[in-house]
Image (cartoon, rainbow, N blue to C red; front, side, top):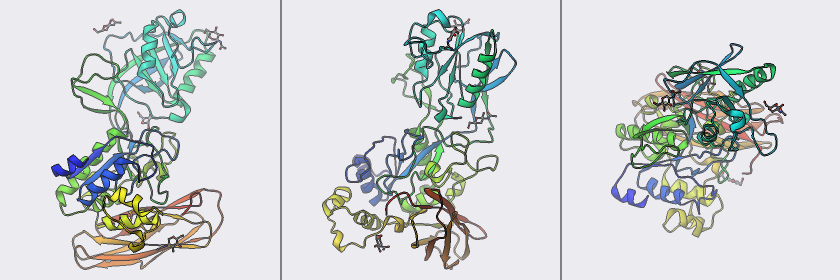
Length: 487
Ligand SMILES: *[C@@H]1O[C@H](CO)[C@@H](O)[C@H](O)[C@H]1NC(C)=O
Ligand SMILES: *[C@@H]1O[C@H](CO)[C@@H](O)[C@H](O)[C@H]1NC(C)=O
Ligand SMILES: *[C@@H]1O[C@H](CO)[C@@H](O)[C@H](O)[C@H]1NC(C)=O
Ligand SMILES: *[C@@H]1O[C@H](CO)[C@@H](O)[C@H](O)[C@H]1NC(C)=O
């Protein structure tokens, strides 16, 4: 990263991860700090350890931490069962000459060490030869490799069925045999048919690219989740962007994991695929506003993001439940709006130093991150909730808490904003003042958000949102009130 900084880049996009939850050790956090100080925007992959919570990497507040979402495209393979039922799955391998006739359907059913339900036992020849084989994918486990064992055993085709935790997240991949990757729920339908039929059959019908899925974007099952362990009161991830079945150029001298043919394109899934989308969008925003700091660009991306999917309903997770902020961050990136946010929550390098001191780090540990002399005794400490972040997370067991935020007017000049609140359950929230009137560009205004616990709820955390609304702009911040993590 140091070399890139010396070369004078504007944006750094990192897809490396780690599980070190301490900014003093995490090298990426340290390199990114130097970059941020020089005005370089750093976006990093949140990690592919979902769907469990607290699985993030690259969670430092001076980094844009990027989760992964689905797109409205599927590369469809329909599974048609002997009784006429159809379910839709995906594979990028779309053979033109595969038989559309029904073939016998078989399910390795785990008698002894042979014939495991995940099809990962070799030599299944006896039972799979010439048949379509149902294989249960282990949690976030291998996929193309499963197809290889089925193919090597003589299987004609494969239906790859998600584990329960992976829900509806299916991937279009370069399978080595005719295959369809289907959701957990569709898998249960096929199992029910299989049980009920004397002579179960299925056929695979290749339908190519289908666009316009109105439930997209959804959070991908593998996308790592918050809360952050290193600073739980700074919401992470920050944002989600397209990261499932992403088609891109591929260095032709690098083999794909399952193919010796050195293709010049490949299709991959992961937060390493969504991160470059966000880096590109940051570059566009930076191009339009070269003077904006990395924090201002991040704020613009977060406060203009979408929390509704293409059909207007809330963005969902892999189980098709509404996604919480710990899963999607502020929301799904909206590139067009990001260039014109109206207001930004800016943060200086010194604020982050105050934040590190506020975490209780020793001077030498803060210096390990900043790579310059720091004396926390002389620094204005910044509590996590008080960092001028575009989202607000407060720890509140009982009583009251207040946080202060400062917004900078980056809109047209004269503009009047009013606050609109969606108040989290069981909490009273007020904002003072409720109106912000700006006369000129770059003018700053501060306001105080007060939280008061009204009633004891069951939930570990409750969610709401705060919007500053003018005639031209809506500046949205997620709010989380938690009782689950320490201050
Ligand atoms: C389909 O075409 C591929 C590529 O030409 C070939 O390798 C394969 O054997 C063919 N399969 C059938 C069932 O004809
Ligand atoms: C496993 O599958 C075989 C072949 O389909 C079948 O005969 C056997 O009853 C199945 N066993 C279980 C426990 O389902
Ligand atoms: C849209 O995507 C979801 C995955 O989130 C999938 O379950 C659903 O079947 C897709 N709908 C269509 C019409 O392809
Ligand atoms: C920071 O948090 C500590 C511990 O809760 C509290 O005593 C202190 O007043 C807070 N500082 C600010 C500036 O809010």
